[in-house]
Length: 509
Length: 83
Image (cartoon, rainbow over all chains, first blue to last red; front, side, top):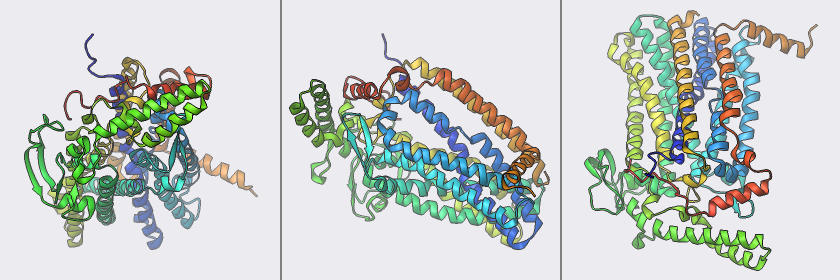
């Protein structure tokens, strides 16, 4: 029987990627637009100008549409955990259970109270309380994102826990270490600020469309100025947090950083690739060139990774095969360690079942020496420790290039807005409108970098995706993949239709 | 004089009644929740460990068996190309 083209784990990963990327269409807009609503309404309350109330209500309607279509799509991921990723779910239940329960309860009360006041409370509660509710929606929505990003950060850099060999679970030992891990913090700050950036692009882009159509020009220009200022500030913050995130990746996930930059052989004064075409035939350890074409900026990757232009940055080959000169233990050695850990874990389990506590203790002592490389024991060969390089490289570069372009757009919008000629810059308004889609592209590319770049791990170094996965028939997961594809497509069409209709109606609705 | 619970009830009731776009959105939310919890969760997404094992001890033993079984391929990302 021939090898299956796509195995169960492929379909499970594809399904999870589909769900997460679909969910991620809605989340960043919610995170950012909620703050923009708070800004618009604050201006209304401060000035008493009814025009700003109309502006707030218009964007609030689009916020509601986005929220309604996106709400609960994240729950599907929990279904997938229980069915497709049962080993993983079991092993991390103790770590994720409390944060995700807090998020669920928090989100419920937030939505049942402040969302209701925000949408139903116009002219029925005081202006001050309504404004307070809008701010609470913004702050609360962003806070509720903390927990899921902390959970994701833990998977990238598992800290504050211990593995229990009797229950096969990672148990929380220090919640502060989990919450305040550098990876979790940079993940939250970078992700939420990128949501602010996307929402700014959304408001600027839709407003630009109004200018192109010659409709609602005053409202459009007022919205654009506020969103462009917020977008510019957010872009700066995205840049700073992106730098911090890259530093955290360099320190805690050097393989991911090497893949992000297509760096196979580590070097001092390592360059950043400003532009490059990856040689897709390149494999770790071979002599083929990495790039077919590349433009490099020397020293920049060393600065990014270690805050030092001349520092050494390890490459994929160093991390796969080891590098004694730089004290890098390669995957080859870690696989050997991991196999010992797994053998001793199996011996511990058998000895415990037979009541042979002396042998169990001996096995556990050896297991504890090698447990940090537990997941490596499942890899077939050292090169399996490297993620898909081209996907990670291109996604990272798309994200960075777009992220560099967006602040320039905001600057241009502000420049022409203050010159009073914004409505005449048709090229800029077209660019603003199409930047909405580029913003979504950058968002999704960011997730691809984060998730594909950490392959083959479900939990960095401890649990490969193939072991995290449930041993189901591929056809089962394949079926639900296509069900989701259909459901998500229908929902997305529904959202776009309602959203477009509402934009066509405009703020007069 | 209305009591606080009564005021809250009236607030929500009137809010729902006054919805325009919201009506369509709530319909979508309910249809979506029905598909997710009434169809997908029940028929396609059983909790594997909860369905196939009766106790936590059995579940832990199963996961440990999987974890210590090194015959299972850990990942197949590298099998075709480096994309």
